[in-house]
Image: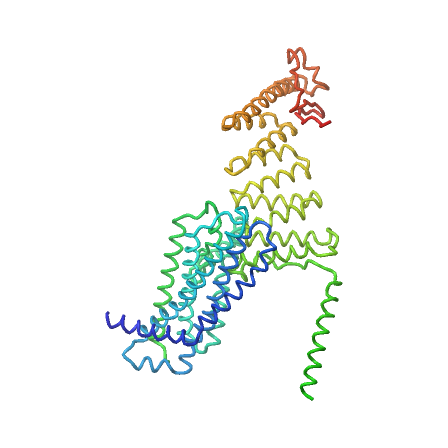
Length: 274
Length: 270
């Protein structure tokens, strides 16, 4: 067990340092800061909800930076390591394929965590500064706890996507194919709740729609609804209407989903030809 | 030679860009159709609020442009934009302000559409009394339904931050709309919960006025029950249904009986 942890942490360190070496984080942080600065010019359009618009913008920039990291750096790191055969160098050591998968995941997740944390701190200070500049009617409430909860939710969501990328890398060959499948997966996750809602409204009148509704519910298990981890609206609410049970269950479900997907990825990697 | 050509191209580019800027302002402004709500929800994903903010900015820029097209040309597209913004980000209060100012005055149908937006907003933003005020104002001013407006405004009194005058306005509109029982019960609730002594006295004075008017209302209903028609004037109620007509005339309310409805109206200012 101790040796397994050592192997996993070694691969994680390698992935982490490789990411730092490529200055991926630096590039994304600079991009995010530029976007955040440009957003200030648009706040003048809002007459009342300046606080809300600012918080939406800052958190969306963090989300976008995370997605760019996942779809470009993470996919490249995992898929290209196979294309360039650098994976053989790692696996020639006494490291199992599952340890390689977990180590790579932890390394990339650590980079993602540093990216989220640094952008989150910048966003937090930005919101505090904006709050001091405005009258209370324009920015009445800033729930720090819910702000941190939103960041955790975003981090967990992006870790799930990262796990899916690892799974697709185990299933497919080629970074471009993995990238396309990952993007398609993300869009399917966004679409299913919308279709479910539309079908739910029609289901009382159309009996045949029941099977389709159950099919969609089944698909929602494979393509989870990540909007359950979106707590942006609660940051500026006086009394946010969040139910503790729903929030905890969303986190627990997502964590379980992550573990299941990683387990499948480890299984695929251990069975496939490299 | 090449440097000279490059410099020439650069100057040409700058001058064309400046010319193009002037031409753009002559173009007619138009609010294009928006994508369906579902598509917005799918594409926007985690950034749905940001998408809503961007669509809001688009609408603000359009409404601020000159010359603005005729309102009938763009009102349907405008309403669709508001629906999309609400679907993506119902907590954005600026959207409600904008819909109230840009659409509610156009026609009764548009007022009803704005009220639908407000109703959804009231359900999502349970602590925002302003949405009740907007809806109530629309019902009173544009739709000419004071009783309905009174109910909407009174519903906002459950919100802690609602200003006191909103409840008072609700009773005034209830009286104007002939909803005397509702107005009286609201006044009694406000009197019971009020801590300010002067305000309590004002409520007590209004309660007396409403109770007098309610006596007449009961007598009218009694008259209708027996004669199957409403009386032509209040004097027909005396002496069979009322010993004497209560006097209601003063600074606060004037009694009015017209079109088979008893109302308490605010006296016209001299």
